[in-house]
Amino acid sequence: MSKSRTSQTFRPPVMEAARWVSGKSFPADKPLIIVSQAAPVDPPPEPLREHIAEVALNRPEAHLYGPVLGLPALRTEVAQQWSQAYGGSITDQNVGLTSGCNQAFAAVVSSLTNDGDEVILPTPWYFNHKMWLDMQGVIAVPLDTSAEMLPDVTQAEALITERTKAIALVTPNNPAGVEYPGELLSAFYDLAKRHGIALIVDETYRDFDSRSGAPHRLFENSDWSGTLIHLYSFSKAYRLTGHRVGAIIAAPERLDEMEKFLDTVTICPNQLGQHAALWGMQNLSQWLAGEREEILARRAAIEANMPVLEAKGWRLLGLGAYFAYLQHPFDIPSDALAQELVDAAHVLALPGTMFHPEGSERGKQEIRLAFANVTADQIKVLFDRLASYRPKP
Image 1: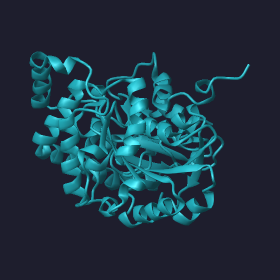
Image 2: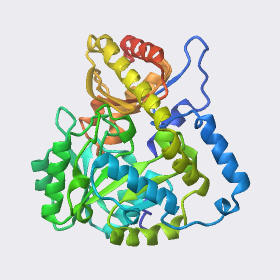
Image 3: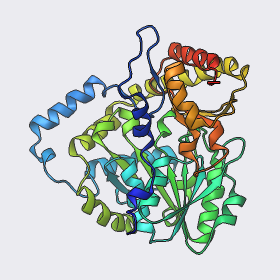
């Protein structure tokens, strides 16, 4: 009997890592530092929670099915703000809303591929992208990145076959943190257009990009919707992780195909979450700017404390958004190292093996630190603990 597709993919890494600390206790003077998950743990700001409560109490329609592709007002707001931010022409008909950005990716892939088709993913890859491709019978084709953690267009072109349907990029990157240069994204856009495949650009962490202005000019292409599919998440910007609201920006005819998937899976995105996202976009720009500054301050704390680790042989490979991606100096694979760090250093992080193809030698030397929920002071403690760690003999 053949195995199901779910049984042939790996366990969700964040859940797997949580098992490493299940049932364990940590002393008050050396508490567990959790840098395994890239999601805010605080609730939305109080004014936004008050708005959610008002909608829940006073708008009966918010408890009913809504449009499959999302609230018209939110679709319009996204179109207007994205057009202003990116300098392109985006209408509400280019916007579809989803139950989180993971579902956005799932809808896109389902609309593009059949069994045995291929999608190119730079490695280290975002593990949920790889999991969904596995569960759809789509082949994830790994594209190794450079020492600067950037994918190469020439190498990507060599991987394109008649079964290739898309290239999927994440910027700022998860897990490596790097911000892809606009010129690189334009080169990948030209490559995808030339070969008649889709370029999926996941910008879940766009609100925490360290650069000012638009991070790329892809939407300025008059025919962008023939090639580009853009993904976004409201979870990180407004702390709406539990409300599950994401977005797809694409050609209307592509959204028509994705609508079939979305209607079958969830029928419509969470209504309260959509109202919250709309209110946040219209009222929390200054608050969000403060959140960005805090993340940039933590990024600076990573850079400031890195010499402590560099003296022990560690290397910083990538840094940005919520992530620091490091190469460790030990003669043990990173999956074993990550589990040892729980007991030896009281640190929960994800190993590079979770972001690479099985057996990857590179993945065995890498580790991801998600620092969105640790303060600058905690980052110093974290780095001191890592610097003091010694593998078991």
